[in-house]
Amino acid sequence: MRYMEFQTLTNKVNEGKALIYMWEIHGEDGALTGCYLGKAKGGSKRPKRHYKRNVRRLLQNQPYRKSNPEGYRKVHRALAEATRCGHRITLSFLCNISESENINDIEQRLIKEHDCQGNKSWQLNG
Image: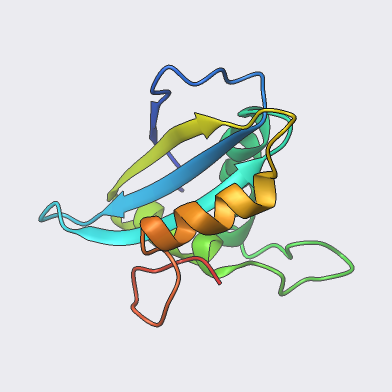
């Protein structure tokens, strides 16, 4: 079985502080096939570990959680498929969020700016 491997681009973002991150998946031809933007109030630990765990569990046909076995989101399924196919996965940290800023507002603004939400197959938010 393959394990999810990804390149991390820190972009001089402090990984120990609240941040906005983006997953990107590129197919064999280099074309963008997936884009997901998220927030992490506790820094980079959650996106680095939880997505990898969720993809591993999905590839092993294990439930998301006992209370919500079908809870895998579109991003988990896309990352699992990319892992199966050996496609390039990148995790980028876009910016830190200060205590005076609203992390939810900034996340929503950046989702729109990066066009990560919609009906196109590569838009993985939502």
